Length: 361
Image (cartoon, rainbow, N blue to C red; front, side):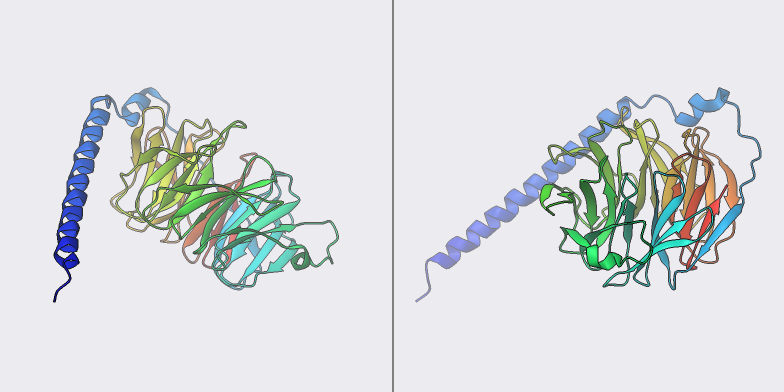
């Protein structure tokens, strides 16, 4: 004899599926309505506003230093606030602290895993954080004693359920923000390793994040494999703005120096600029001839230039206002994986799969 529950369950399932598809169509119509409302406010393009602005003259940037020492692809780098030291991480499992001026290596740590995809310098300059395929973010205090064993003082701070893609200290050494392949971002207390806030809203791997530049800034932006760039409120854990105009993974996001906009770089071979107050994309930086993805973006200190590291081994420099390319830099012998402008804006550093880092000025 058949259980009377079977047909009942079947009808319940049908009803559930109907409700789901109904909700899906409803959310799609709401999305379209929002887009239409956004479009109504769209009155003028950035490059039209910038027509009266003087163009940038020819400028020359060269490689001034080459940092050699990694045995494999350089995956991430960050500047120290002292404008001189750099931390870099690599596929060889090593994390190296360099003096960018003398090119000397000041510290080296071998991580328990290869593919150290994320590294960051603490604001005080007294510690570095890193992680990758170990799904963790570890903090190493740095001391003046060159012979000290850093690994012994290692502190595991963050734990994700998939690889760590990016990490950044907040305005103090006490908190760290991480993004991961598990689709989440999280804020951690460094001392206790406690999870302070988690951020759910990406539908796939989160690949990058950047903190708003102001001292009081309690927001950050993240980008991921769902082609979305989300702006988050750190206190509430809520996503407060979301932008979905890229056609592929977003590999890098970076705030404009004023904090009112941010740029993103994607596998769709474009960089884009999003204005937070206008709540929309205001510029696309692309050329027919550029067909390779952008791995990393950063602004000059004034915000007039946007540097992009590309998978075709080049670095393109864009005029943010006019949307034109003002320079193209050659030097790396493999794809450029990471790029950061120094805190005083006098130089920038790029890391590459050719195992080296280069300081340009």
